[in-house]
Amino acid sequence: MPVTNKRHRNIQRFARLLDSSIRIPGLDVRIGLDGLLGLIPGIGDTLGALLSSSILAEAARLGAPRSVLLKMAFNIAIDALIGTIPILGDLFDFAWKANLRNLALLERYFDDPRRTSVTSGLLVGGLILLVLAFVAFLGWAAVSMLQALYGLAAGT
Image (tube, rainbow, N blue to C red; front, side):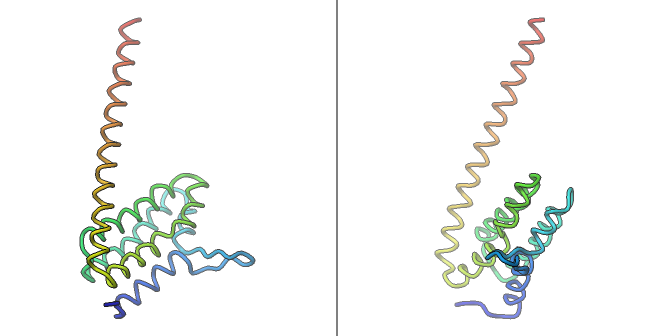
């Protein structure tokens, strides 16, 4: 059941504006407003994430399940976080195209709701485990560093 209502068309237009509305002459590359905003130091990636979040909110209004919404949020988070890295993050911003990824995810959901929800749910579960493992690693690293510092301080 492909969705073709006005809200869906608005999401399509907005995702394209953010990710592929400008063709680079002489190259087979398209960029969008999100990538250009990412060039503004300090606030550009935050503004891009806020604009991208409007697509996420609209997907929720259209009835996308939590697993799909979480996967969409992950795409936005990756775009915003990596985009903060000077120069490399900006290049990543132009290539990642989180909004077009989220548009495709939403369209896949409306074409095949069960399969998309299960696949998204598995990915979200895996990401949660990965984040928990990373937090545990950071905790271990912090404790190890504190122990080493304490050992150095006690030894002097």
